[in-house]
Amino acid sequence: MFIFKRVVCVGGTIVPQCTALSVSNFSAYRCVRSPKRNSPYSSVDSERYSSLVKSVMSSRVSSQTPETLQAEDEHVYGPVVKAPTPSSRPEMRVPKTLHPFLHFQETLQAEEPESGPPVRILLNRAGRSSVPSVTRILQQTLSPEQIFYLERWKRRMIAELGEEGFKEYSQKLFRQGRLFHSAVEDILVSGATWKNRNPPETSEYPPEVQGYMESISHVLEDVGAVRATESTVHHDTLNYLGIVDCVSRYRGVLCVIDWKTSEKPKPFLSNTYDNPVQVAAYAGALNNDGNYKYQVENGLIVVAYKDGSPAHVHQLSSELMLKYWTTWLIRLEEFTEQRSSHASSAFEQKR
Image 1 (cartoon, rainbow, N blue to C red):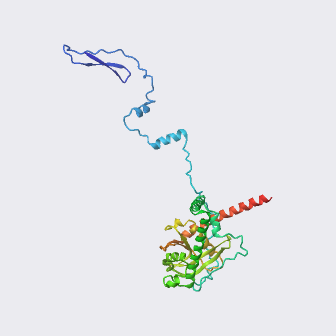
Image 2: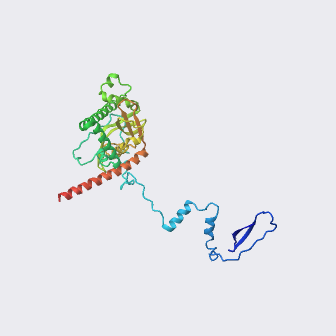
Image 3: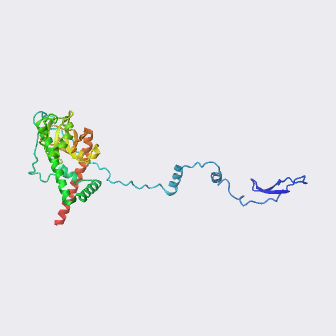
């Protein structure tokens, strides 16, 4: 008994083959060959499509990679246009004019000695009513993100305390800050240290201030050679002013010191928000103010806590001060542009 199988040969000829089954009484095998027929694939250009056939029929892994596939797609459809990454802040600006942070021309020949009582130049608004303060400029040039978080905090506090309660809370914080600065100035001007003061002397401060003073007690031990306290500085060229909390040496380095109070810990410089920009603005104004015959390149931010826990101290090197000085120049330009825009709008409305 024979079973025939059809096999396609290379030339396209179909050749039958016979397979023998062992059956009793059969002693020979025969193969009958079928007539030759033309294949429909014989007219195909095998050389033209050989690479395609090999890539499809090969049992090996394709040599194409995601990179080659992307290259083919770009060749056919063009390069992929990537959408810009969303950002909450605009692209970093560069100041139109990079005003110098230091101003040595008038200070090298007549530098003030460090001995003597600290200088305190009171704020005199006579003839300076249009000169903006550092605080005002920073408040009016907050980023959208800063405004969002500030408004959210305000709404949360009003929801908890009510309108009148929030007003009293804000006034209390302002009063505490004023009393705290006054107490620090009293110690620095007297030349006494917190450690050497008698308990009756330390208790003379209001109760809400004593915790803050205890918080900065370890900082005061490293402060010396005080040159200025609560003193006005004015940048003659850029025309802005501010009041520096303190100018003195901290561990031997002359710094503009800013005393801050906080209800929450601020262990990192990033927690202080715009405070470094504020310190750089004060230092830049002092360096360009003819009332001060010296230059300050470093800064210090001291964050005191009401519960008396040790204050966090953030030192600003001369490199960091230059960085934040550049940021300040940008904020000052933004403020100037806003004021010019508002003045133009007001003028158009009057016409």
